[in-house]
Length: 587
Image (cartoon, rainbow, N blue to C red; front, side, top):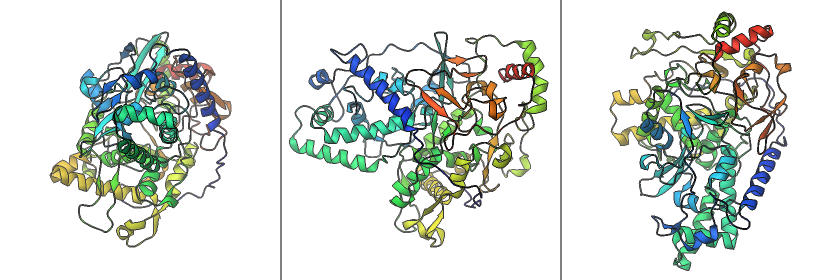
């Protein structure tokens, strides 16, 4: 399915200060959350909070026979949706269709307490503090625990239920404006996935070591009448789960994650069982918007992947999907938890998603000013970001006659934006271990080759399990010709800017808070700004970036956070700059 051709690493220095202090922001947010929870729970739980002692005595009987706490009673949010071509049913399917992610047993998650507060880890107050999109809707049975968007109910082949994550957790946006809440499907979320995973891991450890926490947990999972042997077995299972989950989750702030770093760690270290392959995930990027992506010639933000199913397989492996690597080269190896059919359907749904138009909930666009901004855009921006109708690849270049929106790949040295994530992808190597025979005995290869191999072989295995014909396999792969174009790892993708107004913060690493600052020289952009407010700024076009409780301070001086580069259209007059911004709102 994929070429394994490797692109040579850049010659840029690797310097990174692992003592950057990013976690200071997490510490402040955690303190803010814990204080709020302790206040809410003393002397008795506030509305919407959970009395864990009361729930030890009464609760709903779960599928495992134990008592599970009732979902938190939260008023249904008054969310307004934009016209993006999705029905309510399709939206729910995107939010909660399983992909094969097995984070931890589902009933465990519903029963775990926060490691630093006497509340449940699934409580809406906590999840909101991390900017997850809470959703007290069962979504037609897809969301039985009434969990936030993207936290899924997965069932494996043995019937075990798992908490998983789907792409909707990272690619569903939402903003507020003057009391209204507006959903942007396919937009970047502000959720802090890293802190959520860190707290899950901390909760498991605390539950395992704390006698009282474990007693309450065991009662919820097993029932009050569980035997001592069953409780001992549960404690051992807890320890196994802790060992399986990586404990390293660097805090990159709201709406960011080093996705490639996490995927490489899962594929080359955790799943392969080679701890030496583990690297700190220190090159975070913003969650990109995904509308239009299936129609592009390259489906990753850099020039790594042109095949959508391979990209999606890698994504699931990064959120705790599992693969069984064979001990020897055998046909049909690489069984996995990947839900291949669901991944294909998810891609089809995204292909029907339309870019969001500037909504009526925001101040009306100044049509005259926007019209004056159009020629400014044509002169300064359209060379990389052409307007519709977008230029297409030639049908003759695809053996199936398919065409895609032609993408311009801009070399990192030309665009000048922070190169850390590009360098990490291009330069990383990994030991092959028992997979060496797939690489002619090589003991170490570029990490991307191991990822390509895993995606390839998983696809072949799952396609065979589903009985897919060759024609169906081609359709699953998005009709891309494997290896038609060699990967271009040292470049960023310049895509059409449809719906760009709804995708702040900007640049691949989220280092620029709004469109106004994107049009300033790098030296005049904010060196620090606050991330975490959901309130939209319709003038500068981005989120309000003033300091606020529980927010994250984005510091552009830290490695991977530079706001340099992309200095195009930065020499405009102030009037022309505002006119261009007004035009960008119309896309």
